[in-house]
Image 1 (cartoon, helix red, strand yellow):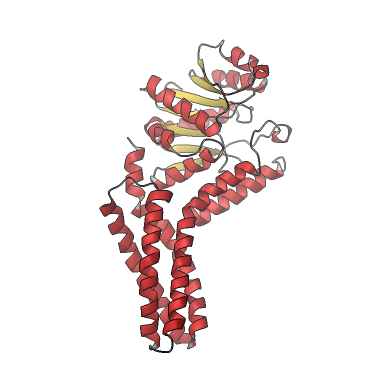
Image 2 (tube, rainbow, N blue to C red):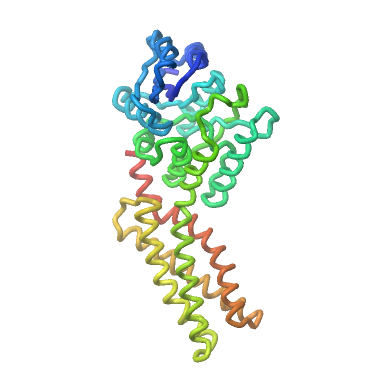
Length: 359
């Protein structure tokens, strides 16, 4: 385990913190960074006990800043003080990650050079309902909207090669939402990751967790919704303009001219809105505009052609009137929206994020 640093964020710990530390030392880890994330005076003893080990470094937030900020504090410290390190393994301080599983994840990271997620089995009867429900919902949303297949999206056991720590320090999020942001950032940057199955341990129905099921779940889903909001809003703009024009032009134009005359203005306005929002608010791209806008409009032209062609084809097949044409547009563009979102995520804005992440 030489060159591997274990990162352990902690808030108001009990005796389990040092059970984790002792287990890590027994597995051969010789560098442990604990972040005291603003714990109160009544919970200082576990940190003092941990500091007795020369292998342990304790960093301190004077006030609680959240798990995400605690992880970023540790990553920044390691980049500065462990420049020759091979990577980090993040673990929770409640003794629910077994030392042998932590070691397996670290070994798999060094073997493959990939980010490793230690994933639990949420089908077991000892898993608390809120953990099972929250994880399955997040897994479903990430798979549907982002194409990410990860069975345990909330695992705190993650092994990250040193070359990606600079990017991890820049990932958005200060609290539990940071862990979801990390997954999205890996996907955008095309950084490979994989799962390693670990033992599923829940102690006292996970009572020691500081995860708030409503507040923190909202933050997690707010991140995911930020990815789809601009596309949904642009679809609404496109739909409204198209609907107004298609009814307005019906008395004066043939079907194909009417559809074309309604379709083009709607798509131009909505695409400009969508590009601007995606570049500035969703993907936060720092790439030159000429690069992303060329890729975006290459995609836009193909998508527009598919949309128009499919709407016209369906209208001809069913001899549709204006109402049915509008319904066809909703169906067609909803399907194309999901496909377009994935392409934007993996191609249009991906390269700039990838280069930034590997600095």
